[in-house]
Each structure stands twice: as C-alpha cells, then as structure tokens.
Length: 430
Ligand code: FES
Ligand SMILES: [Fe+2]
Image (cartoon, rainbow, N blue to C red; front, side, top):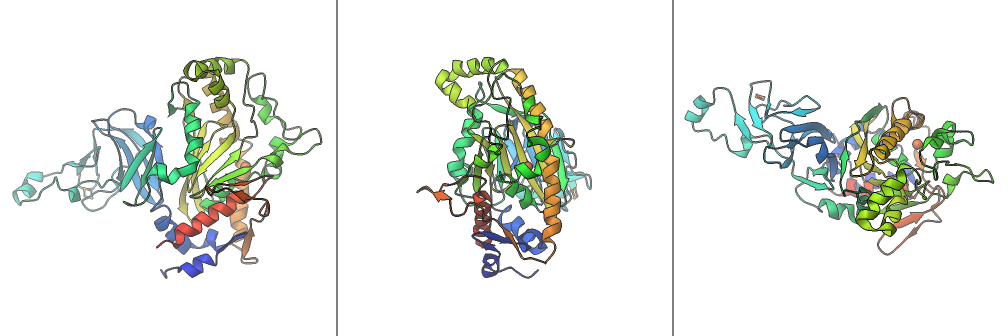
C-alpha cells in the first residue's frame, strides 16, 4: 500500500468542503484505523454490562477484536481477543460469563484478566524451562483502559492524553447527563438496537450534528400532521410541534456547539423537558438529593446529543448511547443502547426505552430514514462526477470563544466542518 502523505491528505479537506475520496478510498480507511481508531479513546462497553466476576462482552476497536471482562477480583480489563499461542481469535460469543477463556485450536486457557491459566500437556514444556507466567504467553491487554461514569473507553496507544483530558470541554455535558440519575449512576439495562448500512462510518458521524436534514429526511415524522413525538408522556412538553405558528420548522433555530478534539453537541428541541405525572415523582427524587433548583435545572434538557469524536454519541434527550463501529470503507455497524438513570421511577425508563424503539428500532420511522440517506450518500460519492461534498452552511455566522469552543445557529454545518478538521489533524499526525 502506498503511503498517503500529509500534503495529499490536506488536499482532501477544505474549510468548507470534503473530497469524496475521504468516504470511498480503502487506503484512507486503513489509515483511519491506524491513526484515528488506533490512537483515540474508543468506547467499548459499560461496566453495568459486566457486573459479575467472569462477565464479558466482545466488541471491536476499529478492526481490532477485543474483550471487555470483569475479573474475579472485580477489576475491569480490555483484552485483545487473540490467542498468544498461534494467534486464533479466542472468544466468539458476543457476551457471557465464564471462569476462563479457552482457545478452541489447541486448548490454551486464560484467566479473565488475560493471564495464561494453563495449556494441554503443560508439564512437558515446563520441564524444558518455559515460563508460562511471562506476558508473552497471556492474552494481551490493550495499551490503556479508563472509565467515566462506568462507560469504559480503551486506547490502543500507550501515550497521549487521558480519557478525561481527551473529552476536555465536552465532559461537562456528559457529567450533567449522569447527574440526572437520582442515585448518581447509570446502567445499560434496556437491550440494544443494531444496524448495518452500506456506507462509510463518517456519514453516521456527520449526521449526529446535522440538524439541517431533519425537515426533509424525516418529513413523515415531523410534518405538521406527524404524530410521533406527541406520544411522549406527561402533561407538558409532550405536544412537540416541529413548526411554529408561522409554519416555520422550529428545528431551524437549533444550534450546534463544537469542542476541541472534534467533539460536538446539538441544542435540544425540547428545552422545557417533561413535566406532570411520573415526571413530578422523578423531580422530587432529584430534589431530595440536590435541592429543587438543581432538580429543575437537571430536568431542563439543554442538549439533544453529545458526540465524542470519533464514534460515541450520548443521546441526552432519549437517554441512550449510540456507538459507531466501522467495518470497511463502505460498511458500518451502529449499536444503540437505552441508558437507565438509576433511582428514577421505572416508568421513566420504560418511557425512554419506548422512545428509543420509536426512533431507532428496525421498524422505526426515524433511523430508517437516515440509513436510506447514508446509503444514497455512499452511492453518490462513489461516482467521480463531482469531487467535493459541501459543508458551507452557516460558515459566515459561526463564532469561536477563547477556549476554542465554537457555536453555530440555524441548521449550521459547523459540526461537519469541525469533525473533518479534527479528522485531518489526526490523519496528518504521523
Ligand atoms: S492458537 Fe490458541 S491454543 Fe493454539
Ligand atoms: Fe436523522
């Protein structure tokens, strides 16, 4: 594979446009796996999914298969899913509970922290002086692994900023999300929606800060006669209208904030939050812990979603997370998990699971629209009829403060511009 030089990479991302090659070139995808997924903090799972000793789940960091496991002493590990002996993938189950991981090829077994536990006919080898406690004989842990509110991120690179440093300014929204749990903790307890689409992973990433597409792509849901969002419970903040009295879509006013490192957030369409019914019970639980003023603040949802570059999204309004897992240059997997705010009334969680089903299940009216858009984008950029994809919208109105936090209003494309600049910086760092 011919290396792609810095100059060549720089020619692909302009302040207001992205070259189509960024979405279709397999050599670019290979470089992304090394320089982005090989160096950044990548979400692997939540500690609540591996509650008991021996619990594990399998996932990927870029193309690298890994296992998130809970060891006998309660510690959390992220291991490369590869046998030290001759290299087989060790665990093929998606998740489960086990005392040891066993490779099916020659039967080597490993403790859930990756140390070699034993191998068939070990005594013979030991007589020959092999030291099986050496790290070479174990399943290798990833270079770094850190949690934030139980969300485990791993990094294949031993050096670079810590997870919290990498989140930087974006961390505040993350912490506010968890603070809305009366017990101060969250868990993944509502299953998972998974989908794959024939398109590049960055189509999904770009879409996370794309408020502009909503009125067109999701017309069947958000049109004045659309009824999807009227199904929210409570007595106020439920009758969400996407159009104001002048028949102007309200989403046009929603702004986007971008943070150093390629992270971003979009403002909430439902800033008032929900009230009435079970929401008052929830408010009282929060007030008991934080006081009523703070409880009201926590129930006011200022942010719709928070995207941590490159592949993690916190859907604040829907209480869920979305994870992007690239498969190939034109194939992507996405997983969505409802998040339970511990200590909140069960009815609130049920409502949130229902809402995620409404927007993100295979038969939903919302996500399926986006998938069709991603598929068409890929088909479009595979043609060389035109070289560039434009992201010009709102460029003249965007503002950055002295912490390098940027803001754009009215269906701005600041988020897409910012993501691709972060992409370029990482791709150019050798
Ligand atoms: S490759 Fe795993 S035991 Fe041989
Ligand atoms: Fe969408």
